[in-house]
Length: 218
Length: 293
Image (cartoon, rainbow over all chains, first blue to last red; front, side):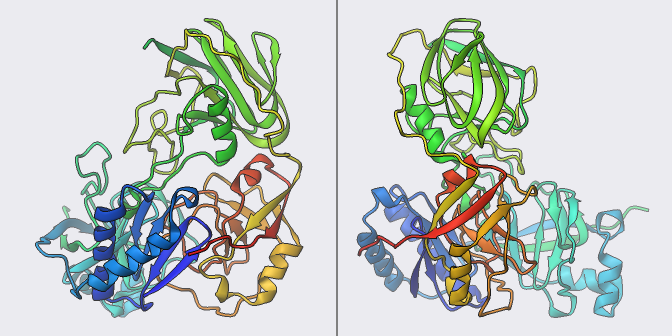
């Protein structure tokens, strides 16, 4: 494990730079342990793919003690791939049509039929590696390499909420209307984030997700 | 406690409610938001006797006209605007006791981009996830998640007890058209050639008009890279990061969040001075890391 300061307010705990469920879970687990132990004295604890960010106020933090606590908790962690008792969260998706405008071109890019793309996207269970960008936006992986098309060179100015997209080996759902460059293949009615709910975000780091194709009407 | 109301007669260009930010929810993608110029926000609060995290109004380039329906104590800090309360000129960086029905008008802006209006007791719009800060992209916090419009009526605490007016002597930072930003090496500093830091600290960068609360786009010479691939691994980001994008546009992120591509050079800078001067140049200035462990 590597500790690295980014400026004077963010300490990054970094592991091997790779997309690996075990490493990601390690980051999430360390985040949970640190939240329980020092959550009240730091500003925020933020898991990444293979890192954990700890935001602090440098004028109110004993930096040496912070680093010691992190190393201590890190050493105590076991290695595992998923959080216990995580059910698979299902997201019903209408693929293609106006709601998935990039689906035909993506099928062409992949050299397969539209149905094949849907099948490949919906047949996997994805892991929530992290959230970011806007509230409730989860980075899910990994997408079948054959349909892992790169993001658009020029982002769309407005991607409607609920849009399901692919960007390389990542897939995800836009919770709100924002600009976005991902390949849009469908849409879900699931409410990804609602600050009025007891648990605002539908997805959390380490969750497991499946996309369920809905039959298209007409 | 007596409730008061700030009536928005004219909203100005982009006036939002801000406090010190929505911390503690970045793991579910919630951006921190908060003032672009934390120093002036805090100073305005200090002048009216508020804690630093009380919500203020962040005023951008063109100021509003506001009416207070109860007595109120206010202070404006940051960008130098002509401001008048019922026709009487107000000083930036000083607190004033207003009578009921007072009208505060922002006029011409002389220097800087953003000013902060604090009212004693704070702007009391509903807190969302523990914060009143407005995040415009996600429509969260502040007043209905958006910039103020004419006719809005913001709840505030009426201040009936009189406290002595205060003035910030020599505390306001110079807001010239040239800002010096202090920086520390970021998490990806080693992705760049040493010459990149030289460039960053020896050349002035111009703030592009394509800048917003999410980030300043800076035009200047390219920063030489050691590693050219685009890293895919997102990680937590820090507000005030200087980022170098492959597309050539360098930027200073005014906002935090973990959304950032990690292709960048992460450098914290003195964000306040970036906000005060809006439209001219930025010069980076390297400082030493003062950490000890």
